[in-house]
Amino acid sequence: MPAPTDLTLVIANKRYSSWSLRPWLALRAAGATFDEVLVPLRTEETKQALLAHGPTGKAPVLKQVDLTVWDSLAICEYVAELFPQAQLWPADTKARAIARSVAAEMHSGFMDLRRNLFFDLGHVHDMPERVEAAAGDIARIQALWADCRVRFGAGGPFLFGHFTIADAMYAPVCVRLRGWKGIALTPEANAYIDAIFALPAMREWVTAAAEEPWVIDYLNI
Image (tube, rainbow, N blue to C red; front, side):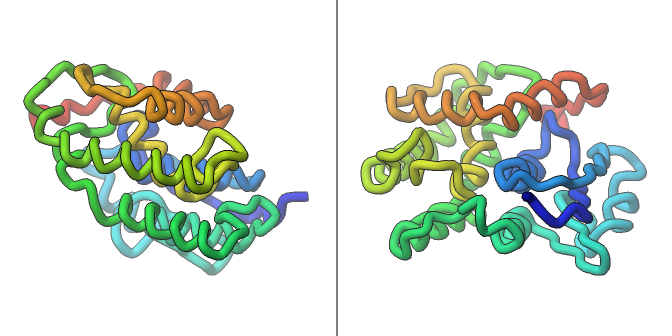
């Protein structure tokens, strides 16, 4: 049975917070029971509300009794240790090393993608100039996905067969690639994105995002 049950994940808006989605999916994949605290972004109270939960004043934050873990990838790593039966990293040593490499690449890279194709589950944008500015990152992401699928993914629809932290890290990228018109994707990339969106947890997140009352105009910030 999944344990422990004393976890609280502090997140930001489900419509806009790509970093919150990552550990949320990892916790769901682990079968963890956890409380959820949502702090809306871009309000006068946001910074102080988040500082009440973690030292950086950013989301997400995972809390467990007297422990606070911040940063999406660090939270995912901790969840993997709490729930080893979920196999949130591949069992094979070499596959696990590659999975950590591609997760770290997402964590620290793809800045053109982030700057231009912001995460927004509530709207599909049509701005060809932004898509073009992110073209290099989009090409690299598709190549990375294809390599992982060929080398490690034959046992299932995800990058390493079954769902891992690597998939949690790239799930928001799937949202970005589906949220902007004019992005040419390979059939293999589209199939992978379909698999991410078909996850019950992902469907739950998307549904909740659609019900949120907050709207942020990132194009005019």
